[in-house]
Image 1 (cartoon, rainbow, N blue to C red):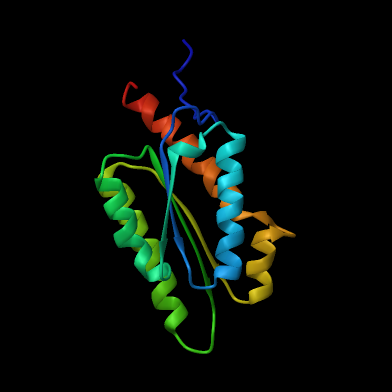
Image 2: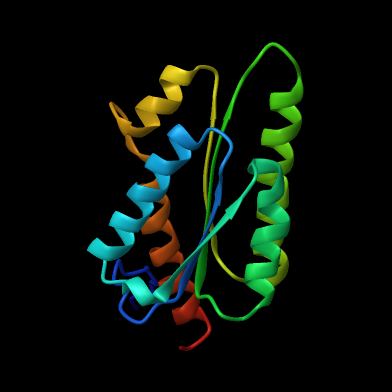
Length: 158
């Protein structure tokens, strides 16, 4: 007897998506945002189905993502930021708390959140992941958000 298999579709027709994007390291996060918006459009999410919220930095992403998820207005959320390692442990705190906080929001609210926060050792690595050699992680996060909205919609019978 065949088993049931559920897989998300990369069709964003009718989806409402919020993007929370950090302004800190904006020369990177602006590229991630452009990639995410391109990814959403290419997969059928209408421009009027997208809300962009700018916050100071990655540290502020979890509380913003929580407010967006709890609003009930969005099928998926994308968190975008860039934390680049420096000479102090600040990187570890910001990157770790951003990841943990965004993950907690997703689990507690049931709203899928794509984590498009770069955590790199160097500026060059961040540039590579924001549209250069390694593609654009904002675009990848958009695809993840759409797919997870589809998967969870199927699991919830929508």
